Length: 116
Image: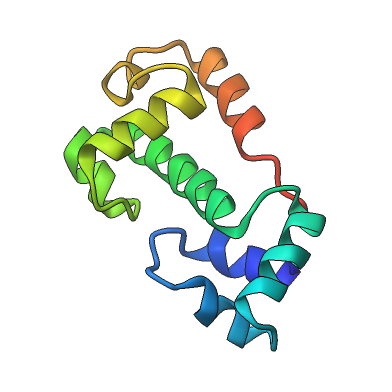
């Protein structure tokens, strides 16, 4: 599972299916999902989304527009990205840039708890 986590963290925007990720570590999709939940505490897809949101926050901090951030961080749908960002980080992506730095660190720390 460490290998799968590291691959996701290295490139969260990569388009890889659960089946591809499972084959890379010698498991089937169901086996990877079960093992990953035990190891990381979340499903593989949820872990990928978390890592993409962390990447998105970094892009927004660097001044990237919300729509460009959405697509560069691996999301295909702007409205889904905005909902996921707000749900996970407690504020909209456009409001993220103006938020106090300490507040951002707290929110990201809660989101990016890595099992490694």
